[in-house]
Every structure is written in C-alpha cells, then in structure tokens.
Image 1 (cartoon, rainbow, N blue to C red):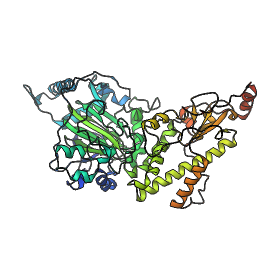
Image 2: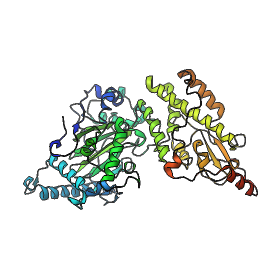
Image 3: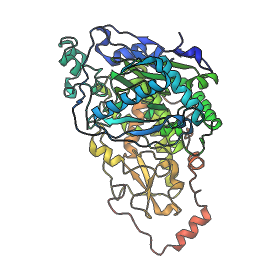
Amino acid sequence: MEAPPQKRRAGGRVLETKTYRPTLAEFRDPYVYIASIRAEGERYGIVRIVPPKGWEMDCYVDFEAKAKIGSKRQRVDLLMEGDSFDDGGRYTLSEYAWMADAFAKSWVRKTHPKHFKGEDCRYDHDLLEGDYWDIVDRGDQGSPGVVVDYGNDVDAAEYWSGFPRGPPQPELCAENLDRCEPFSYEYYARSGWNLNNIARWPGSVLRYYEEPVSGVTSPWLYLGMLFSTFPWHNEDNYFYSINYHHAGAPKQWYGTPGSKADAFEVAFRALVNENGGDMTAGDSLHNINTMISAYEIAKRGVPMYALRQMPGEFVVTFPRAYHGGFSLGFNIGEAVNFATPDWVQHARVANERYRRSGRLAVISHDRLMFTLRANEGRDTIDGQARTILREELRRLVVEDLKLRDAAYASGVRDISKLCTPPANKTDVINIAATTYDDKRICIACQHTCFLSAVGCECSKKDIVCLRHVAYSCQCPNSMKYMIEWESRDALEALLKELDAELGPLPKKRGRDLPIPGGAQVAEDRGLDPPPSLEEQARMASALATPRLPGTTAGPL
C-alpha cells in the first residue's frame, strides 16, 4: 500500500510502513512487545504502534503556563541547502498554538480557497503534504520566504511532560502495572509506554543512569506547526527512539531501514550537492538541518516508507534508521531514546564511526559496556545479546592491552607506581561519573577514555586515547605518560573470564586485531601529522629540565 499523495509526485515509490495494534496483554511490557516485532519492524526502519482500545490518555501539558519556550526558525523553501537554523520566537504554549493556527488558516486561504468558508477551514492533509514537497523541491523558485518556527527539544524535565510523572524506578515493572485499573491515571503513570518511564523500565540498558540524560533517557517535548520540519537524521549512538503524538494535527513521517543507511547517505549527499548544497562544508545529517524529498531518495533505489501519525499513536524508529518529516498543523509530540539488549551490536558500529569522524557521543560507550557487565548477573540481558556484549568487552580489553604495550614500547612513561587516578565506578552511572567523563575526552577523536589514556607534561588537561598517542602534541614520547584507570592485572583477569565464557579468539585473528579506524582520524579531521623521530629527539634535547607529573596526573 502506497502512502498518499503518491500518485501526484514525481520520483520513486514511497510505501506505507507497518502498523501494529497490540492487545492489552501484549501492551503490558514495551520491551517484550518491541522484541516481538523487531525482526519485521527493522525492515521498515520506522513503524506505527496504535495502543489497545481504551487508551485515551489526557495530555498533561499545562496550557495555562506562563513560561516561554524557544524555537528554531526554518525557511522551508531553503531546507535542501542545509543552512543552520536561526533562533525563532519565544512563546508560551497558548501563544505558539495561536500563532500556528493563524499560519495554517492563512496558508489554506491563500493556496486552497475552496477549503475556506468564513472562519471554517477544512484541512486536506494530502494536499498539504503535496504543498510541502512543492515548496522544498522547488526551493526559492517556487514559494520563497515560507518561514515557520519549530518548538523542538523542549526539556520535559525542566518544563512539562504530556505524560504523568512516573513512580521511582524500583516500582516500575509489568507486575505492578497489572495491579492498576487499565487506562486509569495510575495505569498511565506506571506504564512502560509512558515516555518518562521507558528508559527506566526493566529490560532497558539505559536504566543504570541515575541522573536523566536530556533527550536520551528523559523526554523532549515538540511543538509543531504547518510545515515545521524534523530533517533527516538517525538517533545519537544509533539508539531506538519512540515518539508519542499527544494532540493536534497529524505528523507526516518518512524513513528507511537501518540496513540501508549507507545507501541512504550516498543518495542524500548526491541530491544535496545537485541542488546547490555543499556536503563537503559540514555534515548536514549530523547537524539535522537538511530536508530532501523522500520520493527523490526512493528514485535512487533506497527503500522509503511513510506514515501519518495521528493523536494517541506511537512511532518507533529502529537503530540507525534514517527518518524525517513535518507537521500538518499545530501539534504536541514527545519523544525519547531507549535501548534494548540487542542494541549493543549497533552501539559498537556507532562508536567506531564517531571516532573516525571526530564526533562526540552523547554517552560513553565504554562506560556503558562495563556497567552492563557489572550488572550482568541481575540484568535481563541474555542469549545472543549477552554474547554480543561479552564480545564487545573482549574487543575493548584486547585493544587496550595491545595499545598499552605499543605506547610503552614507543617511550611513553609508566607512572602507575607514582600515582593512581580515581577508580571507575561501574555499578551505576551517576552525575559524578558523567562529569568526570567529560574531562577525559580524546582531543583527536573525541572518544571518552575509560580504561586508559595518555597525557603530556605540556598540558594539564589535554589527553588522547591510545589510538592517537602520536597526535597528542609535538612533544617527544619521553614527556608523555600513561593514565591507567583499570590496571593490567584487572584487565587480564577480565579477559580470562571472557575467554572462558566465549571460548578463545579464532587463531587467524589472535590477539593482534587491527584497530578499526585508528589510522583514519588524521585524514578525516585534518590533524597535524605526528613529529618524526628526528624532530622528537631535537625537541627533547632542547628541554632544559623535564617536568614530572604530580600525583594528580590525569584529567581532573
């Protein structure tokens, strides 16, 4: 089945995505249900989930609130060019709703006068979808100066959530939900589909974050108006996402499977460049500021799916699935990330890609992997997901030990007997841990160092991961020193445990695994090349008195 208005648009076919309608029993646990549809849902990238009959939750946003939220101003006719969005107006909720309704009526009166009688306005959403793509596709040759304000990324913890606030995390589970009258206030407050709860629900690999991570474990509210756009992107760290439509006009979505992400990126970049944009000047996909016709992307052979989200419906996006869309009038939505145990396989891919491009991740990949290991005995990670986690941990440990040896052999000093940095805490991830992580980020690839890092006497704050020792500075390695948050003995012991659980690594791979992406960062980010051995010797001889690190060596 094709998504309207398919027949009137040039380009490739865009098909309607899958819609799921769980029963009340199936709906009791979001992680169990999503696991049951994952194999099929991943083939679409985005899917719609319609709650069981009887779900009629009120929107708990305070429309009388006087607090003002910011917005981003979007030139709809220039969305293909990938320019960054300026700040738009600041509005109370009621002011934004009034402004959005006035704009929609004005647009229909001007472009579809037959649908406007007196003060009564009939919104034909198929026509409005066609209008949107006409504006985007034709750019400033069509309807120039179409400007909208998008109230995106409103922190629900700071402002409002459309869901009731949930109970403490220990009380969240399907068994406690079963004690509630279906679709009562208490049911909505305790449901795992409540976006305040889903990241804290049993089965979530993000539930060990004690403090909310805005937009990741704590939802964001979205205020949309006609043509306000959420441009093409996939989620940070290749997380899942879930979006709920609280109230208002429909929201039009497009998506492609995560397995087709590479093909999507090739088509996207080509279309941007063909239409006057410049994908070499920055990463428009990362910046989330570029919209290209889903129909044109489909024409390049990339499978594209669509859905029109109505109030009371959920949309789930799967790991690495690109998605984008726009609103068909004033509406209120809410969204948050989540991660099931199977996500670990995507986490590794995201982590490597971010390191190659020098992009800072929203969470520390290594910390989360070790936290999941510390909680393995009481967690719901089992089967294939547990094997994937253990394989990823073994990869991290093998790489670290191998590169420690290489760094020490190159002249980096071992100061482990002189000072000991704070030990890693892996039972939970609290504010102290994330604050400390922010201070130990590799200056070359933006990776959060967790097991070890290398510092230099020339800087009190800059460090590099072990992949990029040569890119830390121009100083000789004799001035550099290793910071070990996990001792060799501890890592060797963990490696023995993992080998016992997984079996030894295949001989053809051995312990000399290549480090993926390690040699590419300098080319990708334009870093200075490392100094030659002759240059290092000359700099070393020019030093009057070498400075030794103090007992607080490390990124404090």
